[in-house]
Image (cartoon, rainbow, N blue to C red):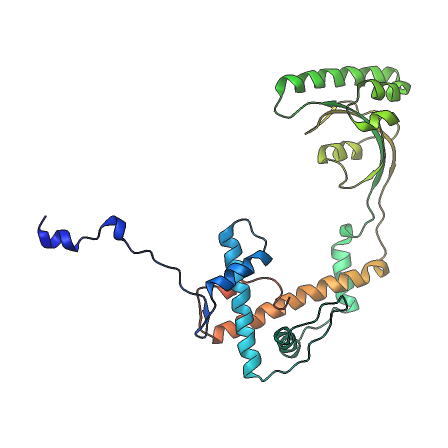
Length: 283
């Protein structure tokens, strides 16, 4: 290799680091330090995701601030009723959104259609009165798991012959604090137990012990269902306001995202993709 070629070849240790494009809106740069501070307000699976969300949020605020300035928006700060008062900047952004983003409220028909299409969401939870006997065994302890299963199966067979002995068996064998109450768990509803336990309860006949031990991450359960009360569909009138609030919020978010997309389309935005932005514009 010639001397000139050697001098021209870049040394690996001297390769220049390519910095990401600074975040800016119409030439106004958002400092990296400000983005770093903003990340604490955005939950994310990793720091890069939090940084991206923070950069989007600050870029959107800058975009809205410039639009509020262009439209000469003036607004008085208001109190949220919980002791927090808007800053003048927050008030201007709120007033801009209220003026420029028209959001229709969900009418009776829209609420009724959503109710009819999602009727299963509007049920009171199923209730179960149950008891169990727990043989503890860690999921990754194969020896203990097999031993617990054998003991539980033997107890299930014995209780099939002597169902009245459940409370005494719970006091003698169960590793759950409920053993002091004969294994009684009281009243549990949907989501309050592990999925395997709840699934077993749903398939049981009240008054009987489950024919097989129920396996969960805690170990093996001998389960008895004492009583079941199925949930009921809640009347439309009872959930109408909740549905309206949900639909109004969904429409509001879509309308605000569309508004930001329109503003971003007319602006020069660098270093961040506002088309992928989600969430409220004014917090």
